[in-house]
Amino acid sequence: MKITVDRNMPLASEAFATLGDVQVVDGRTLRPEDLKDTTILAIRSTTKVNAALLAQTAVQFVGTATIGTDHMDIPFLEQRGIQWAYSPGCNARSVAEYMTAALLHIAVTHNQPLTGQTLGIIGVGNVGRRVATQAQALGMRVLQNDPPRARAEGSEGFCKLEQLLRESDFISMHVPLERKGQDATFHMANQHFFEQIKPGAFFVNAARGAIVDTAALLEALDTGRICGAVIDTWEGEPTISQELRERVILGTPHIAGHSYEGKLNGTLMVYDAACRFLHRNPQFDAHPHMPAPPLPTIAFPDGHTEAEAYNKLIKAIYDIAADDARLRAAQAEPTGFDALRRNYPIRREFACTCVTDIPDSKHSQKVQNLGFQRAPTP
Image (cartoon, rainbow, N blue to C red; front, top):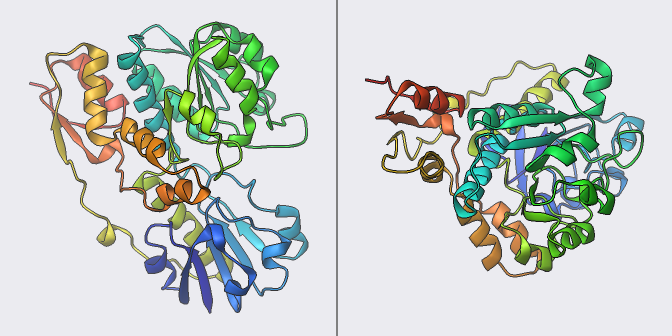
């Protein structure tokens, strides 16, 4: 059996080799002729899975190692009897850690204390829940907007979008891309959206690029309606607005969820789904293949303000400003954006590092809540 996997899926070759013959491809440039005799296709969001790609192939199963499915024509797959799977929550911790790094970068570079500030989270699924937990660990008040969850679970704990926009000092988008229906999110962040925002707020999008109207965001920046923006997902990827790239505080090439663990979780979730499709027991164990963490321990930084200390701590694990610098230095061509994603350096999650020399129990609890291991306090 032939299995085709995206080269950007960690350990995919090793995992799927337990099921058949593996072909590794570039997901962005995948062609129908590359799928000759392929039974199982494992991809990421750069591959558009539709009739144009699959109609003349023998593919029977498609799995995406991502939390979103907007790159997949699911009605076509179901009409053709092609089973499909996705990876909800696989990189939720990675995106939450990206958000923590972004918030602390803003706190230090813009003299913007986080304690007591309000973070509005739009879309409170697997990712949004983790973002809320980390924001609360930083001492922030959290407002949550998620109409589908509010309808299903009741309104307690959720607020209307208008209230969130009016009261939030930071706004973070974590919704899927939906183009139709009562919960449509395409261009959700439009001119009217930004007109309602609390003046001077910061805006972050690490969800899907097309949920933001780029022109409206630029206007909000031009008029000073918002103080600044952090953008990881861009409308029109891999061709992005160079004007917006120059205007944001931080701009990164759709890598918020690209921790090693986040991508590996996606690989393993697709692998397990393929095993179920084939009625096979999973045989692959990832642990012997895992690279050692680059920074197993780190001492808690002393002699700093609280924001500076946590920014320095997290920067040692994940330097979000370095991702921003790489995107600014990349050429404007689409290949530059994709090359940054394809060649993204291994980034480990906070849980791979143990923090030592923590000064007191308050910081010890905060370190743990942010996801690090912690050495016992004296």
